[in-house]
Length: 329
Image 1: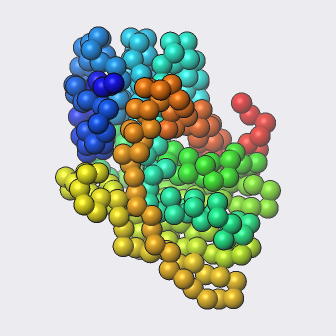
Image 2: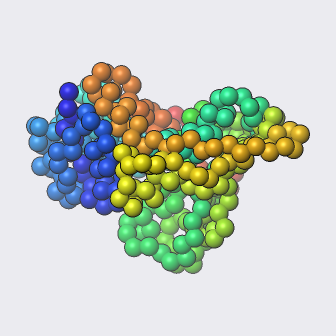
Image 3: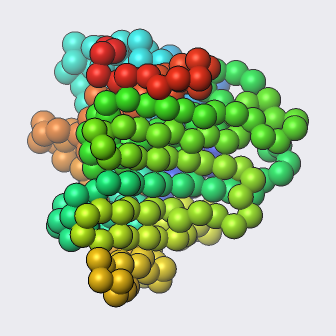
């Protein structure tokens, strides 16, 4: 079974990420590409089975809704939608139409996160007491484009938060409470460019943070448990490879030479090799879900939970207080 794919989005997300990954999966045929201003024809094409929405954040909901109403399976870039209400509407529509709806949380297949997940599941770290994830950049100048314009769906939290929260949810599930600090640190910034979220899981803390003014990045991951600690610097290599024109079929794609460091309770250290990243696994899993009727590689309910936590984070930052996460829908 060949699944014919229509890709909406001619920017970086569409051309650098989605197109090469779609082409790497034998069951998928990239049959058409359109900009978000001329997507109607692609959505209406009866030969298209799957629509991928890789457009500015504000357009995710209307384009995904139109595709589902046209009887297509749908992949949506992160963030899934602007609000929980929009996410709920898309999930309900997909269920009504009997179509696969999936969100592109490709960072589940980052090599460093695969390494972290395997370590946590192995029990080598013991019970995790502190989980830290940082995603730092050094960009003093405001970049052109919709991400840094004062509008819904813009800003650093909307950009990086969905990925990082999704990774945390995979490891630990939904938290008990959240305390958030969200601000703009560059003088001419129109949207948030720094944030730090502290999630409470009983006595465990999960701290996620991103900065636009960090010339010396903090560890990408730092986990401290009752048995050992693990610290890993540097970002997954797949984005840089894709931007450089390399793809999943190229030798060494997804591999990293940056080892993490495991520190045991007795103070001894051991290097931990980083697992090979595997972004193409998203589309392999998606093809299987469409073909066989199994679960999608990313359940849209997971992405919906991430949006809910981002909304609570914004409330926490605005009100300057800890917000419970268990008593909201």
